[in-house]
Length: 157
Image 1: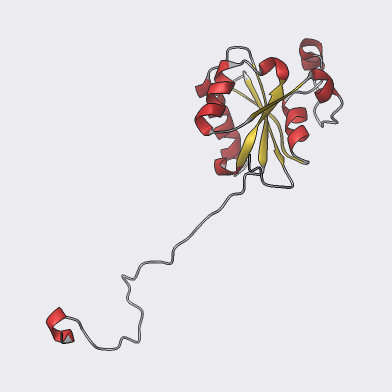
Image 2: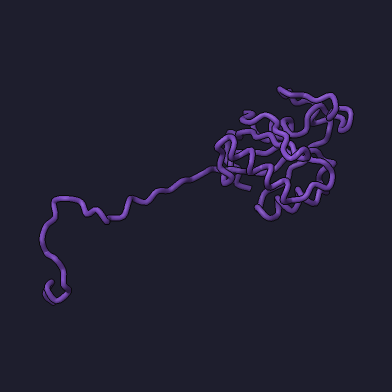
C-alpha cells in the first residue's frame, strides 16, 4: 500500500516532537539493607510498618532494598513482627542475648541490658547481618526501635 493510504506525513522533521515520550527510567535496589528491630511485646504489624516507613522516609532509603529483619530470639514469636515479615516476604533472623551482647554498638542502653540481657537489640541485630550501620537506633511511636545496616552482598534468600 502507498503511504498516503495510511494518512502518514512523509516529511522529514528536523526538530524533536514535543509530544514524544520521555525515555524510560528504571530504578533497581539490591536487597542490601538489614533492619534491626526491637519492640514492646504485642506491638501491632501496622505500628511496625509505620515505624519502618518513617525511618526510611527520614533517611531517604528505599523499602525495596530491605533484605530482612533481625532481632532478639525472644521476639521470634512476636505476632506483629511475624505478620510484617510474611506480608513483605522478608526473612526474620534471630539472635540470642549472648550473641548480641558481643556486638560493639554506638548507643548501648542500660535499661535494655537490664530487661533483655544485652545492651542493644536493634543496632546489634542490624550489625549481625550487615557490616555498616547506616541508621543508628530510632525509636518510633514509643514502642518500636529501628536500626538499619548495609550488607556487603545482596541477600538472595
